[in-house]
Length: 120
Image 1 (cartoon, rainbow, N blue to C red):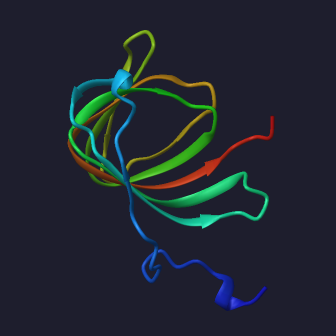
Image 2: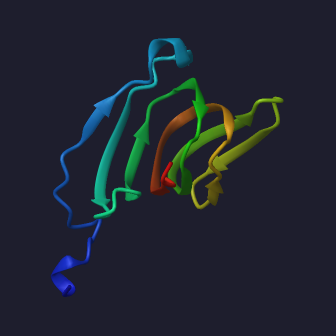
C-alpha cells in the first residue's frame, strides 16, 4: 500500500448512483437519492462515501452499522415508537444495526457515511 491508495473524497471521480426507496417504503414525497460510494473494502464489509437525499420520508431497517456526518440540510430520524431526532449540518452519529423506523428529509440533505456490515 502507498499514498496513492488513500481515497480522497474531494478528488474522487466516483460515478453517482441515483435511486429511490422501494415504493412500499415511501411514506411522503418523492425521495430521490444519490450515492457516491468512494470506497469498498476488499472484504466487502465496509464502504464509505457521500449520500444526498431529496425531500420525502421512507421506512428504514438497518442490517449494517452506519456512521454519518450531516454536511447539509435537515433530516429527522424516528424509531418504531415515534421518538425523533432532528439531524442538521455538523451532527455526527452512529445508527446501529437493527435500528428500524423512518428517515425524513425536510431540506435536501447531504451526508458523509461509513458503513460496516457484519458477516452473516
